[in-house]
Amino acid sequence: MPTLYAAAPWWSGIKHRFISLNHAAAFARFKQYKLKFIWGTSEGVGYCKFQDLFAPVPDVGVINASESELKEIGATCRRSKTMRFRDEQLSVYRPGSQLGDDAIAFDLWGDFAETTALYKQVPLQFRATEILKATPSAELQHQADLFIRRHGLEKRIGIRVRVTENPADGRNLCRIQRELDAAVTSIIQLPWYVRVFIVTDSEYMQQMLASHFPDSKVLPKRFSAVEATGRFIDRKDPAAMRTYVTEIACLTACHNILNYGGFINQESVAGKIIEPSRDNKLLGLRINA
Image 1 (cartoon, rainbow, N blue to C red):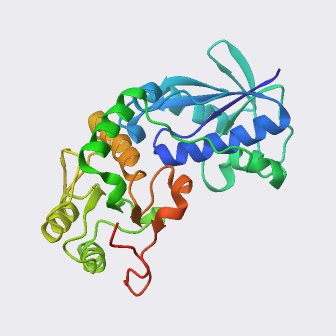
Image 2 (image 1 turned 90 degrees about the horizontal axis):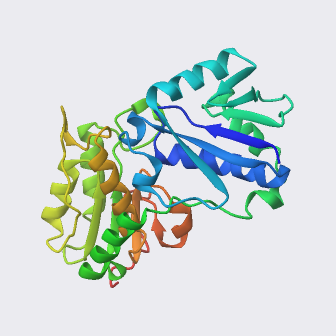
């Protein structure tokens, strides 16, 4: 059976990597390739190995590669038609070209999104046969299960506020004070007595929400990155990345989830998610959970 290797760039976060993985997996299933995903133990995931964060993915072999090795893979894929990865000689896939028997697709945005180009070749009825979730490792899932039971998260409203450090990535919120304050103003339309679970990378956001919701719950973590608008999670911190994966496992157990900025696996709990409306009114949210 031919083998398809896939990878996302060193700076990519968990969500980007799992999108790339799912695109490659859909193509591999359709065309009957064996799939191997190269996971960079790089800054984008707090220098964590795949198994530090996640359980094995069915029918996918995951290979950990250092940040420097992944950077070299990306550079080689951009300049060459073939490359040698460890002991394998691989053809480099380019959108519009034919995929070789043993090949690599390196995923970047825009014109370099090779795994997305492969995904577009898969008929619609084969794309949604299986979505590969980011399943926490046994250790992190155990920690999440203890927290879920201790605090009854199934009866709480989850609040997810992701504050991006890069305004160019197109996501809201950004680390701008007026955006943080607008989000707080919107969220605290919920009555103070609502029982919530808060997941955010902003210390300011966590403190403001905790002051409004006295029965709020959070997982302990450090906000060690200091910026003009306060302290934030350092995405290069391995402990912070493990905490994040545990937080998401807890978040998906909540009764409803108010979602600013997105999170991994949100598609699997789409029925629970409430997106902030443009007029900042939390319409339809069940507060008697």
